[in-house]
Image: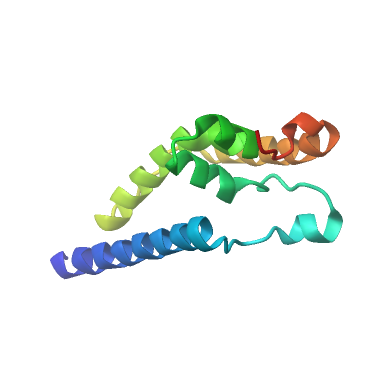
Length: 129
């Protein structure tokens, strides 16, 4: 049991190191992951601007983070809560149900609607202030 927890913590540290490396590459060298959906269709997907939003949050530039992806910015506290709870359950090998499946379906519907609306109303598109 203890060995299993140690392995999971080491894996977690590796993921944190990879995320920190990506952040460095994105901010210092300007290497980023392009949105293939936007490149192919010219439309914004619900996820367009997520990376820039997260980098802006790390830099404490909350207004710019909101402009890059409003949906992710608004739902970020919920995502953090779910992530921490799931991580805790994963480390301790516990089964945990945080929300019902209806709630997750509701989030998917909101995400799809946001993706549609951000292509209709230009103020929802990711912009630089």
